[in-house]
Length: 257
Ligand code: NAD
Image 1 (cartoon, rainbow, N blue to C red):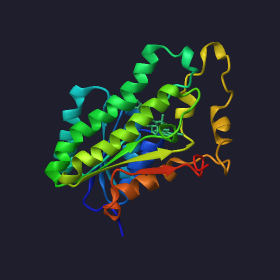
Image 2 (cartoon, rainbow, N blue to C red):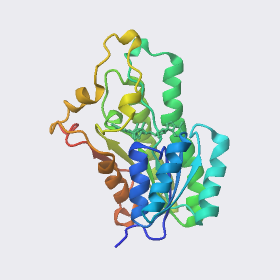
Image 3 (tube, rainbow, N blue to C red):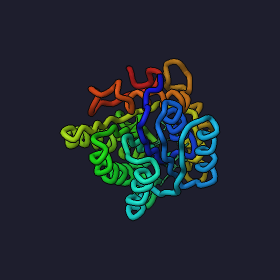
Image 4 (cartoon, rainbow, N blue to C red):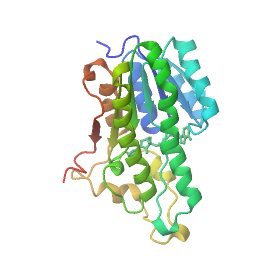
C-alpha cells in the first residue's frame, strides 16, 4: 500500500543526486511532487521520468537563496496540487578547501545555499502547511553537521546550523501539527563529490575525494541516493508521526565510533 496517498511534497535541489531520488520515491508512494532546482534541463528530465513511471510531478526553476522566488514556488504547489504537506529542503553545496585558503566569499556562498536556503524553505513552507492542517519538514544536514570535518569546515558549520535549526523548528511548530527532522547522510555517491573545488593549485588536493571519504566508513561502502530517500520517505509518512526534532543518521556506521 502506498505510504503517501493524497500528500503533496516540495523537494529542492531535485534535479540530481539525493533530491532526485527523494522526489521519485515520494511520487512512487503516491505523493504529488513539485521539484525545484537551478539546473532546468535535468530538473525537467527528472520530473518527466517520474511521470513516465506513473507518478505526478512538475518542475520549477528556483535558486533557494532568492527570497523573492519563494512565494511563487509555494503558490505553485498549492495551485497545481492543492496544498503542501511535505518539504524536503535538500539543495546544498560543498566547498572542500583548507580553512586558510577559503575566501569570505566562498564561506558566504556555502552559508547562503546551505543555511539561508533552508531557512527560506521552512519560512515559506510553514504557512502553507498550516493551511493544510499540518506537515512534515525534512532538512538535509550531513554527518558533517554532527562532527567536525577537516577541509570542510564551512560545510560542517553550515550543516551543524541546519541540525539545530531543525530542532528549533520542531519546537516552534509542534502546536501546528508540523514536524521537523534532520537527515544526516554519510558518504553518498553523487556528483557533489565531483563539484567540490579542491585546494588552490592542486596542493593537497585528494585525487579522488570519494574514495578517501569511503575509507572512513566501517563497511568501506559508499551509500546511494536511494539509501537517503528511504529515510526521507519514513520521515515524510504518517508512520513517523511521533518522530519530531530528531536526527536520522544514514551513514553505514561512519559516525558510530
Ligand atoms: P548534488 O550536487 O548531486 O545535487 C544537489 C542539487 O542541488 C543539484 O541538482 C544542484 O543543481 C542543486 N542546487 C545547488 N545549489 C542550488 C540552489 N542555490 N538552489 C537550488 N538548487 C540548487 O548533491 P547531493 O549529494 O545530492 O546532495 C544533496 C544534499 O545532501 C545536500 O544538501 C548535501 O549537502 C547533502 N549531503 C550529501 C552527501 C553526499 O555524500 N552526497 C553527504 C551528506 C549530505
